[in-house]
Image 1 (cartoon, rainbow, N blue to C red):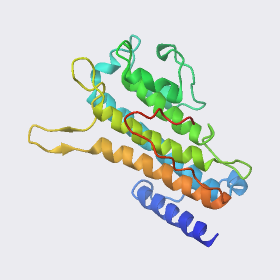
Image 2 (image 1 turned 30 degrees about the horizontal axis):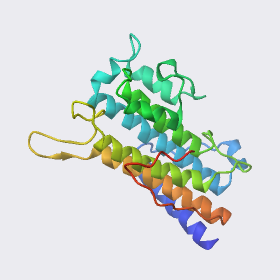
Image 3 (image 1 turned 135 degrees about the horizontal axis):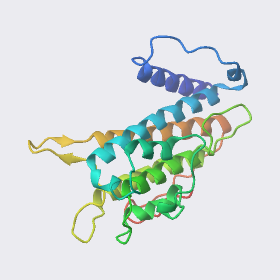
Image 4 (image 1 turned 90 degrees about the horizontal axis):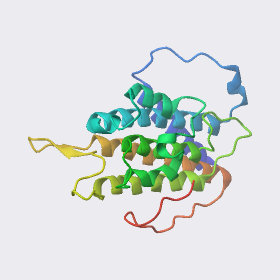
Length: 233
């Protein structure tokens, strides 16, 4: 239990440090926080941080792959995509993705016959999967439970997604979606790698916290980045 308290304190300090430059004023007291445990507050902070990372990733992907936005319905904008991805309550059904959500949408990213917006398919896959890892909740209270295995598996799924984005190519030998690259000056742009790395780290840390809290172990199965299907969440 002492180790769990140390882990929670470390996470809270890390999250506070990442937000230090944002708002100088203290957050107002909220009555509903009385119904939250320390774990709930940590989970809330993780979800907030992950949502921010996913928003940043969405914007960067559309800047790097502007052609994909043009494949959406007429008049589609990045702002519209943000609403579709992050509005609460979440939208689970999108006809242009054959109403797939979460990991079910991921195969579309690399389907040569799919002529829609691959960035949208990727982000519906990522946001839906991570949403599922937190039980499709965006805020947590004392009676809410989290599953350490889902959190851990979602981190492994992000690793699989990153590898395939960097290695799977279409019939013309080009990547389906561009992420990291090298400038004309030979400088490596690893900003996407850093974003994905933060997502993985948050999920792994949350999985460890829940595992310590519940005294339930995590099944760390061996898998292949190239061939393993995404773990069900």
